[in-house]
Length: 224
Ligand SMILES: [Zn+2]
Image (cartoon, rainbow, N blue to C red; front, side, top):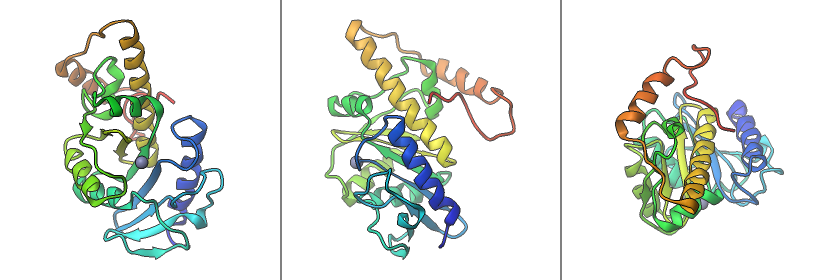
């Protein structure tokens, strides 16, 4: 079985996506890129995360050809591949229809810096990318272009997608986006939140470089 370690991580973190409430049923998908091999391990289409085992994970090349696996790959395979081609430091991608992110995606309202932890995404906002039909090349192109500047974006009337330097990093960014979205929703229920400036988020990003135990490659806090 090729890319056994990555396949195990896709099954393990897929279950985490579900248990942490970021997805339910079969929605959302996740992948890991092996840069050396130029191959992607991606979750299968339409399977409950609880039922996915490493053999169900599909291995494709960066042209979308299946090189190992007996399942159909996620319907958003083009989206994942386009992001990997655009975003050279991306090693893992997570896409969810998590409730609060999807709420703002459906309102076409970006996630703002209502809390300093938005810095986990690498910037002071998470923009909304124009609506395109799911699973299309048009959606893949629009999102991957936006992600040249961002590690996370909202997909209008659809959900959220983010990338990280590891699957752990990508999941943490997905959890951060959902936490920020929930906080922003709470703020809007009461009034207008004060939004931190880009400069204030820059200061947080600077502090993140020395946060924690160091040497692990992790950045910022975890919210999950
Ligand atoms: Zn989707």
